[in-house]
Every structure is written in structure tokens, then in C-alpha cells.
Length: 133
Image 1 (cartoon, one colour):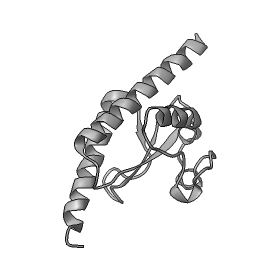
Image 2 (cartoon, rainbow, N blue to C red):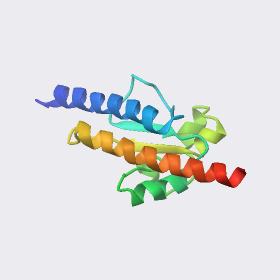
Image 3 (cartoon, rainbow, N blue to C red):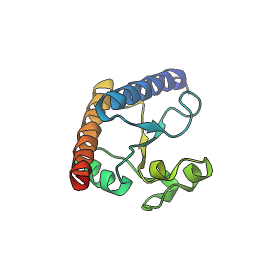
Image 4 (spheres, helix red, strand yellow):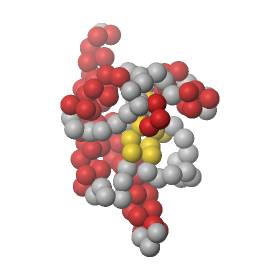
């Protein structure tokens, strides 16, 4: 408990950095949930135009841990019932990913994760655009 405040501030800053880098690397990105309130160590994002299960596999190969649902629905590829209840549109539901942050992570690690995510997102969007044209 002695370090709780500092850890909270650190994870909050990591989250801010991660979101800013993803906006730069993988736009458009949609934040599912509140931008400032809530717990800083969990981020749920949608990457419109990309199926979450395909992105999940690509991120796994890139060494980025993520999930398509909550921790309690581990292993399920179904859209999150929580996001559905929040009224998240269907296209965003199909591309929703959850990322968990820790006070043990560094800014450099968050920047690298965002770079790898951006690379995967750009590649998948490019492939999807090629399929449609």
C-alpha cells in the first residue's frame, strides 16, 4: 500500500502514452469506455475494419499480449457482453481488444507495444483494402 499512489500514477501515465502512440500508429482507434475515469490498468480498444480474432493472432506472433474479452471470459472469441450492453456498435464489437497494463512496465515497453500493434493494424488494413479493390 505504501507505493499504491505512485504505481497508480505510473500506470495512468503508461495508459496515456499507450493511447497517444496508438492514435499515431494505428488510427483510427476507438476507446471503449471512459477516457479518464475507471481503472488505468485495463484498456479496451476497437480497431475498425479488423476482426479481433485475426488481430489477436497477429499480436501474439508479434509478442504483444492481449485479449478479445475480459479476463473472466478468457478463451472466448465472442464479442464482449459488457461492450454490447454499453451500446458499442457492432463493427466496433467485432474489432475490440483488451490490453492490461502494469506498474512493472516501462514507457519504452509501451511505446514498443504500440509500434508493434500499429504495424499489425496497418498490415491487416492494407490486406483488407486489397481484398476489396
